[in-house]
Image (tube, rainbow, N blue to C red):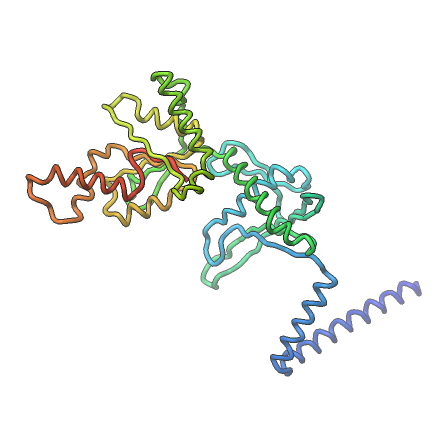
Amino acid sequence: MIRVMGLLQSWGGFGTSIASFIFLWDMIRRYCPPELIRAFDKWARRIRSFFYPYIQISISEFMSNNLKPHDAYAAVEAYLSVHLAKDAKRLRAETVTGGSKLVLSMDEHERVTDEFCGVKVQWISGKLVQRESKYLPELERKYYRLMFHKKYRDMVTDIYLEQVIKAGKEIQMRNRKRKLYTNGHSKTTWSHIVFEHPATFGSLAMEIEKKQEIVDDLLMFRESKDFYARIGKAWKRGYLLYGPSGTGKSTMIAAMANLLDYDVYDLELTSVRDNTELRRLLAETTSKSIIVIEDIDCSLDLTGQRKKKPPEEKIEKTKKEVSRKDTEESGRESLSLGF
């Protein structure tokens, strides 16, 4: 009993000391010059860094100051769900957007340890609840926090994180379903549905030699990122498909998408008013995509309205020039494959 009482007295004295320190620190911050406070904070950070030699990097679910999803967060979540979720005690089950598989990931406030080149790092999942103003509801912002020893800073920031993001994006691509985007319902934005066309080059009816030539060209394009960068050209490829309805143009596009595992953007030119809207739509396309401009010969009046109508005898010549000019400006023909 005497030892217990002595322990309680010790803890009571410790609490009194903490309270006194907080009171004293508050008085210092109120009445000391700002220069002295900044100097003290600087030395305090150095002392804290000496006794706590760990660095923390937070990756939030949304970009700063807006609700735009953070691509790095989704990539980290995919990486952890495959490589480290098996070590977690608390998991949550979700479906990836556009995917069909159930994915297990770390639940809130869970910790897992990863090892890279003999260095152990720790991932911590968390959630921050914020209220932008008293008139808006609370926002939940999830995050992942990476913690590691400061002596491995360069290795973690320059190599490890890059490997995690790369592996996470590859996992995302494997888990997702391809999408078919269209601007038909809205002039300036894309809407999408799941792309489930069954066509493949194996089921495509065409000359075997020509089919193999197209397949080889597509596969070579997919693996030629470094080549395009070396010669200073944009990484894209254009195809012109022509023929009457029912000759297999749409089936060819579907076979290309299934071969490359690319999304498809069906661009309806008649819904676009000018070059500004066209450029905005093209800028909003994602990587690994096929951009399809169907019936381009029926969309020539689109750009002809930007200038005063020419005389009737010059209409045909003007249409041909406008068509060629639009194709060159957009960098794409009827079908474009690009990142």
